[in-house]
Image 1 (cartoon, rainbow, N blue to C red):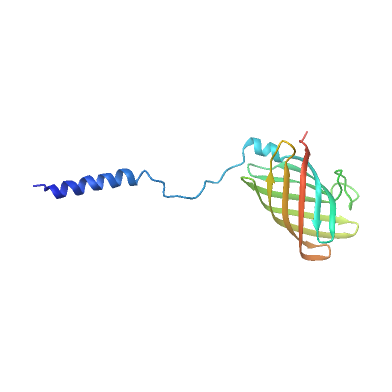
Image 2: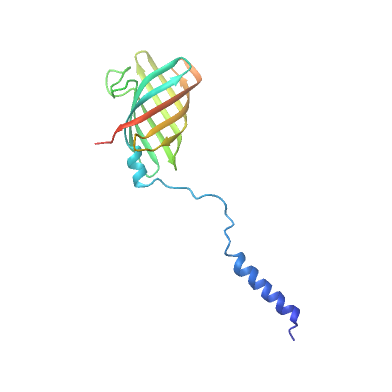
Length: 163
């Protein structure tokens, strides 16, 4: 024979199972994949500067998509997409990942002929997307070309889209 107390227990268990399973126990935010719009927004020609304690140096970069959340491109030590320190090509290469508007695992490899040296510049940054021009800011550490653990900031603004 079923007692009234047992019925209450069954009803209570049913309520807990029904409503308990509806709640979301994962409080973490889902990782966002860059949309087609973000990929298009980040791709292009950028000009700006690389800043260190000693001052600013003109910089330009070309950024291209390389998969759903990765970008790569070319680095120039001038503001007009021509090399400052190499006879041909560019002054270096770059690549980074995107998670939301966070720019992660930025790696720039500088290869200079004048003076001859190679440097690796690594770090993270953030993108600001606006109608006035998309701005990318990376906080980086340079190793090579006469410096070790040298903090620099690369700030560039998009001037035109890829052709």
